[in-house]
Length: 527
Image (cartoon, rainbow, N blue to C red; front, side):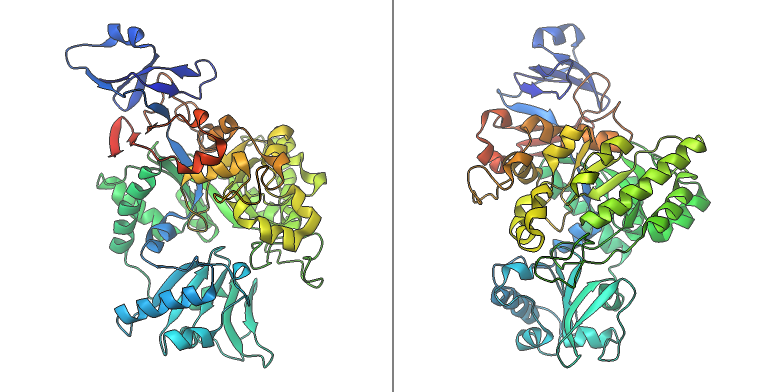
């Protein structure tokens, strides 16, 4: 038995919000309370660890991450730069260091921050002549490819746009190198795929990067190779981060045939929801809108699934015990998904199917008429607070007055909806303290756009934000009786902070870093 003493513990358990001592054994919390309460539990084999007045909170879960992509992206060029020229400089530096036959891969660019907007194949040719270069946008809904990369994919002037995708072209009709949505897959299929062991090694390493940030669990939405890697790591005793694994749509039939259901597995690795995409993203202006984008009256985004398709797929899933997690960013996409969910809920009721925990991923923009519907339909709002300050300038520019109800965390809470927080890494940093800061202040770490934050009426309290990273993901995973709070019988997943987050100015929340991270009663990270 391990007893952590002389600590300031925020349990997030409403029945016992605070304590100063916690007993741990066999991977679970044995007791929480005062140190005097712990004395009768102790024996000769008990280890007492003095936490020296530090703060303990439950471990934090990132409920929307692309784990394999994040892990592999740690090896890519960081293209999240203030200028296109700096991004090109980094490409040139990588080109000098890599084999001429190797692909140059990068991630993170955002044309909305660059003077002049999108780059072109010509730009890449100037810094990496003849090289196959492929750089994904921060949103992961657009990419930038060199001429050699386009040629490897067979993309030319005569190539037609694939369904659900766009190949950007210049005035002469030639591809510029910018690809949107499904068009990205044309090049990605030509890129040599990382081997299974490479993916396993990347995830095994990345999990410790996440633990250092205070993350003890994730809900992953990458594809089948990631699931295979996670299983291999778990079998080898090398997976320590708790993972809820989403089911890609292309594997729905396989999951049904195997009888896999949402919630199957263990507290370490378990099945999550079926992932669907209803639209694109804000950055490349492919999010599906009820009204056109402010800068482009002819563009209302791309609706990737209509209501009937969502219902058809949804019924197939729920009949087989699989819940849904549908990506929806624009107000039209969110309305379409909610319309679909209303019919799926009716089907569940009529056919006496268990009330599954369906989600909408992102919920970035809602029409006022749809705000109450997530609560009414009992749909989880899986949102990423860090997106709000990151996207605020772009949202104001493209959505105008509609952006007043963008990233509406307070309004969703007030409506009775349950918030589930994540990062969408590698789209954003998975650091949960950046997410907490964004949810509470609606500011960037620079303090922009000012003391009140962006659309300050949508700020929420630190306690509510912490629940978004703890009890919210636990409920979404069907683990609310085992995870999310520090209480007797719950998993011993916790983090130690040198500073009490409730005692620091909200503007400084992003600076907090754990001094230790425990999962299942084991210290996996200590400073």
